[in-house]
Image (tube, rainbow, N blue to C red):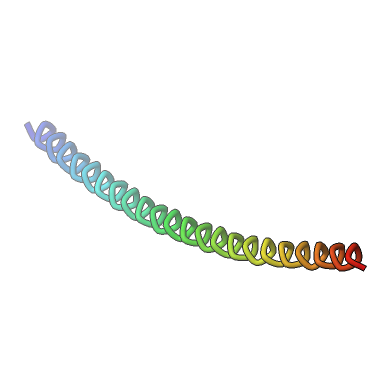
Length: 82
């Protein structure tokens, strides 16, 4: 009977340790997922900012080229008019 009681106590202790391990794993998973979410959000923000900067640069370059093209055309017209 004493052996049976000891086995029951051991089983109860093991169940408690397993439950505690499950809680720890769950907490670690939640922490990991939260950190991953932060990283994804930051990456999306960084990419969005880089895209915006590239679009601004592209717009500026397009305007610069259009201006240069217009100047070139004006030069051609003025040479033809002479």
